[in-house]
Image 1 (cartoon, rainbow, N blue to C red):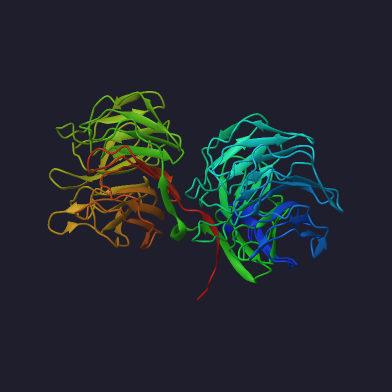
Image 2 (tube, rainbow, N blue to C red):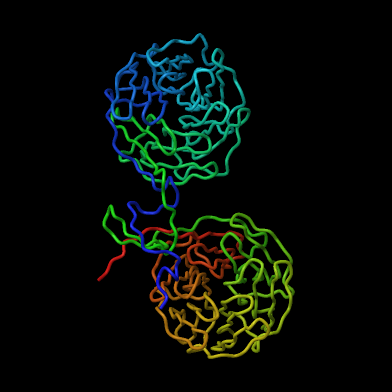
Length: 602
């Protein structure tokens, strides 16, 4: 008998912490020592075990206090020379610098002060444009600092660079804003968040000469946040839009922001220091003294679907599996040819979509998870055709449909061209299909309503056992020997909740959908499938997930849609492209994350 390890490739292990999607995903905040003087709008810099908080605001006073953190305790040090708040800083606890800010309502300062570990010295160099609420490259030094954006007023895009004796204006940020956060160095910095005046998630990278806007924005747009780390590995901490105030923390990997564990206390106008693996958050409105320490594990175990382990810390047996209840739809690329009722197969980041109604279409497009590319057309334009959904972007099958006459034609795709191969035995449209390029099933259809099933062996179609009754406009998923059809329309009963499971020979009744519908789409396997959209009789956005026994409602599509074109061999990563009403060009991408779940035994 095969054991679980032999099937999945894992053995049950004892682990002290749950596996995580990344090093940062395994991170957490813990309480640190309290500041002596609670305040917001401080200048901040340093590392988790050696940080500085200078100046700030404690109602109704602009402060000149300096405190140093040693990883456990805040200690009062010599005061800054110019009391200020909403200023910025850079450096380490033995060699730091602060600049800008506001000394009193309506009074911006350009004053610069350097810190030698004991006392502050006012520099003869002042900012060219005094301003507040700007960002800085926190890993800069006393001779190489960068200050960007802010409020003059108005909201500013200015960037200034310090060489130890002079501030020089350099290229502006692309998006003028106030209250952004910053990270990195004078030669390689990051600017993110802020207010334009509305809350912003915009992210820009600095290469020592100019700013480039990243296509990736913060997941939660906000201002008054803190930053830590470099321009390729940063933290975005807290912040606010007044209201609300956020506890959100996000990690930047050089191209993407990912939400990680929240602060224990939501706060804005806070100080931040450290790296994205060892960060620090302190102070904040309203005059908070609390400090929190962020730590991501140096050694972590990545999530792998199907892993079974015993967590020795929580004394729980756990399984790593897809978390469908937390799955979401997100906007994807735009089709070059808007249409509905076409065919599709492949993975979310490597799919192929073909045919459809636009009116009748031969268009074929490939999808890389971001954008579509038009490739060689099908030989015969048609809609409501079946597809081998478990095929790939370079090897799939399209069959049946309406030309407008009923079609029996079958075409095979080799990654470059479509080739006509042997026809179905019975021409029909509104079919349900599943399988691969060399082993597919074509089931049901219209007109008239059909219970016929045909099996493809890579060369020809053979009639096999019929479905329990005749109907049309259903969806399919799975393989030739473990397939599934669901939804559809049966005139005596209307929209279908029926599910039928196929084992390669016979059909069996499966769990019923929660919402009966026709012209829905599907993706996945017989024991893990997705049904989305369809006609109820109006268009619906409802999405359901099948676990081999029962359907469960999960997150809806953003838009109600009929006859979209599906792709995705997995129920954890699928696409819904095009659709009706009309001939849509939009795409939604479905993702269900892998998560750790406690195993319960009853």
